[in-house]
Length: 345
Image (cartoon, rainbow, N blue to C red):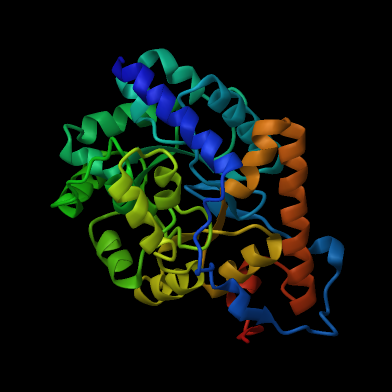
């Protein structure tokens, strides 16, 4: 089987498994259920004037929300990305693309990642696996990923636990921080780092910013476990059995964002990982995030319906967040971030 066919098959399998199998981590949550907002009976606000407007990568966004990096590389992925990007454009969200490595190595599938025609105005992130910096990739390939997708920035994802369970996994994660720093120095667009659902702790967050990254997505546990996804693809019985021991692996999203904000008080932080509602988004913003990221919770609408269905889901998330803000007397995103009305249960 050719490399192109193997890549396409892997991408298709990922979509199918995430949509149709139970791949949420077991015995671990995003941690947000441990927090609740204190209701304010007199908010002293006009509901119609509450604003979600924010900024990201130098662009104004209508809401402080990100459609997290998910897919690309197949015709189904092309349709999914089309629906997601069109909805993001309509609602004014930022968006991340799935790993662009497949398109760099197989230019014939580049169109599955090209969403600028559907989303000309939103902040858009190209995406590559950081581990590829140990497998022949460098700043030039990173630049090309940004240029080919007309992105506003690049996010390098950290997925060590996925790679070790993936049949085709690349598992040499040694010396990557210095190589990430080199990429940050040589690219003329913002470079960020994200996990894929097992979390980035506070100390690593600080080291990443010291290396020159301009944003970090902590991408905590509580949502999709890529260990469980790869378990469903593997024929390695040893690793399939081992995956069960790691069903609760990872750092909860709430814990990650609190630690990250303490270690990087003035830096741009994104919180994703098992976030489904606007109330949960409001919580992570109040805990210290600049943006809240949504992934698998949007995938079903994007795969089975159309951009209008995705847009309706985004609108629901927005109104849930605004209602939470109204309930605590926060007129805008700045006030939400500064609220003292989020308490631990």
